[in-house]
Length: 217
Image (cartoon, rainbow, N blue to C red):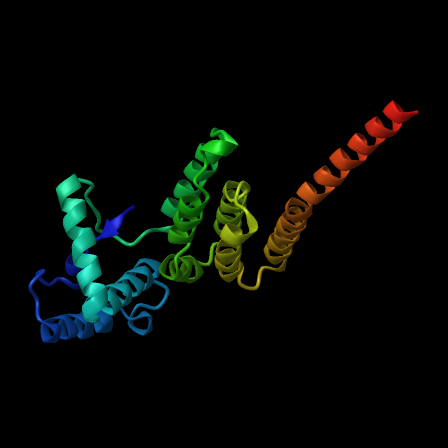
């Protein structure tokens, strides 16, 4: 999982006090606010990242959890993501995930991890960034890639992915219909999975009864 360096985002040190964090947030939020950067999508994306960093670092519990993840990232040498993700990067990530899942055996897929990974790619922050850029073709390709990647997911793991993709679709009725159709298919499959064992047992019982009946004739 990519861990963002929120301290670098807010331009403060890891030991910064809450007051220092608030001061840095006010300064950067004013600098990158969309009202002051009309039409600058990168500035808008940066503003979203600043808000996300402040939301975490200003909350003691969230900050403690984040500090642990940040420490773990440094220990494992995974590195940080220092810049706001662009639609092109999100599209590339969604395409890689789709290809990776397509090459895997169904039984190799960890459903919970896959669902969580897709939700991370289309987190509220990333959806905000995609909406800021508002590139319809890119958003549609991301939705289709992630919907295909989510193919192996059972209904319970698919539902949060569906909700996030619907948020990304926004007012795109074609994409919303595509997502609703996929959800209906998942529900039908879940219903079949629920009752198929009853059908199997009934068939076995019928076969056994027929065998006994034939043997007694």
